[in-house]
Length: 357
Image (cartoon, rainbow, N blue to C red; front, side):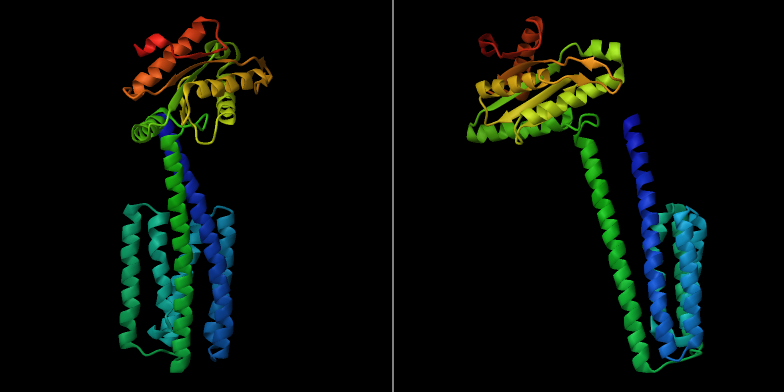
């Protein structure tokens, strides 16, 4: 993996962690709200002990939320684990398995595998499973300490089930959005040049072949523009690479502004750009290339360091032919480009008649 790729992977990993802890904070808020509801429910059911247990739970979630805000993640996770594990045990001991307090333990399953490495999450998952089974077996040998009416037990079970379903739905939405966002970032990294945000050479080659396949089917014209920044090495040497990066970004922006939305533009290599213009003849493409050339001339460019530059480009234009392949069409535009360089730069040249011989 390249250094840039390694850095991007590390950035993605660093980005994933804050989002996870942000969701943990949201879960603390939701759980504390549920415990507020439980406080009133258990008072209504005549179980003041369980009602006041929820006051302790609310306090633990409030402290966990505070800890997460200050990046005291170990403390926060410890409090959340302790609250859910103890609350489930107390609820099941007092009211019974059918109250549904065991559902909350299952919320830890996705959190385990997201918040810690696999070598730690698997043992933790095993312990969680053992605890869950232990609570279930306990209800086979011990009667609830404070049983409630069957109708109230059913209502409590449905309430707990609804809360856990809702939290699973929220977590699933978060993870799906997270995965989709990561996929979009990876796709962007694979297809675009990180500096100019144009297509990179590899993806442009793929798009070009698709466009040429369409040409083979329809016969509609396809033209190519190869552009090169004049005296780019001198700019880099005289003003530094920061100025060079600025120039590349501004030229990329002007190219996109002066061409159509359906035209394909890529950073082809170094200071060279390639544009593919579907449904465009060579004469129409030369007009587009001239717009780009004039668009750069019409501005006074100031680098981030305060240096004033005159930016010009040379361009070569070719049109795809029925007996062509991609390389042949681009090579003709390249030859036209270098005729422009030899002719004084800052000009647009069309492929020569002899190129077709």
